Length: 278
Image 1 (cartoon, helix red, strand yellow):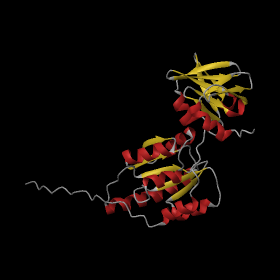
Image 2: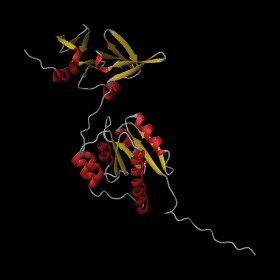
Image 3: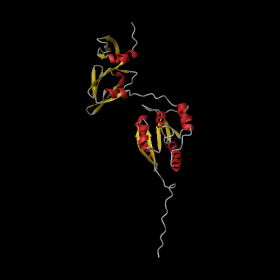
């Protein structure tokens, strides 16, 4: 006579579960290195990567990761800005990452889940992941996010870095099978060409498949470049003369002799950048 025993239900507290992790760093090599270090951890799954803070906010909302490895200094929105936009109460556990060792490091150790300094050491990163395991497990046991105890909020208030957008110093423009690197400060002016833009540099031009609006919004530093017409942007440092035209329009003379129209609509912007004397 055979005896059958009821199957035991596994204890959910003992069943290993994956820590879904989002890696946020504007340095692609740093992200690659992080992913390589995490591959050795069977319970850590990298569910996404992103290179700027704004995208990180979107990915946190859509992916709802258990853990975020978050760079402090990034373009568009820094690490502190990410936490502020997501909200400390809704933010997953965070391991802050930075290449800079300064006074704020001690504050991160006190307020954040952990802080890892670049370049990454495997032992240091794995120690941070071990702390993350405990926190993620606690959140799951509670079946809800742990309430913000005020420490992360205090960190944001005391040590938040100003969100200063960073703009590229160079552009890699594809010509045939190669990419030619152009220094952004060398650009004299840019004109719209349909959905493309024509870059003018030292009497030469390069057509790129990016709109003028996109370049203005994401690539060109507004401290250096100025929109002067709906179809043109100039490098303000290249302007050597301003000549009045009809109906309030003016014409800008660049160092190489090129003339670029500045419409009346954009003249107020020009006057904010150039002080006109009589």
